[in-house]
Length: 243
Image (cartoon, rainbow, N blue to C red; front, side, top):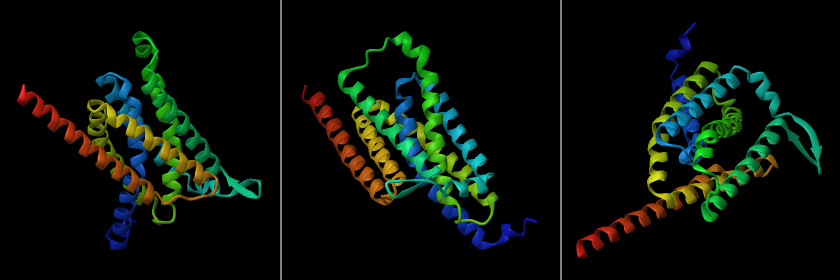
C-alpha cells in the first residue's frame, strides 16, 4: 500500500512541490505580514497563526476535491471573445481585492489613520482575520491548481503543503517584526501587494506574467531597501559618535 514511499521519483516530486508551494506562499506571507502590522504584538501573533492555519486547512480541503479543482479551469462563460473559468474569476476578484487593499493602506500611510485606538482594538482583529480568509482562499486555489499534474499522489501534495506551511509560519514572524521595526519597508511591501494584485488580474484575464519576473523585482527592491536601512543605521551611529 505504501510501496510508493520508496520510489525516488515520489521524493523528487515532493521536493519540487514543496519548493513551489514555498515560492507561491511568498505572496501570502507578504500580505499577512502587512495586514497584521496594525495589531498589538500578541494579537498579531494570533492572527498570523490563525491565518496560516486557515491557509493549510483550505489547501488540504481543496486537495481532497481534485475533481472539483480540475473543473475550475473549464470555461463557464465567454466575454469579448475570451473564455473565463471559475479560476479566472477567483483570480480576478483576488487581484482586485489586493489592488483596493494596497491602495487603501498606502493612502492611510500618507494621509494618516483617522480611526480611534479603541475602535481599532474592537474591530481590528476580526477585520484582519476576515481579510486573511479571503486572500487565503485566492492563494490556495492558485497554488493548488498550479500543483495539479506535478504529482500523482494526493498524499505527496498534502505533505508538500504541510512542510511549506511550516516554513511559512517560521518565516512570517521575523518578516512581520522586521516590517514593524522599519516603517519604510511597509510601503515597499504594500507596493509588492499592488504588483501581486496586477499579476492576479492579468492571470484572470488570460495574460500570464511569469512569477519569476515579479519575484526578481521584489527581491531587487528589497535588496535596495536593505542597503538604505544599513546606510541609515550607519549615519545614526556616526551622529551619536560625533556628538
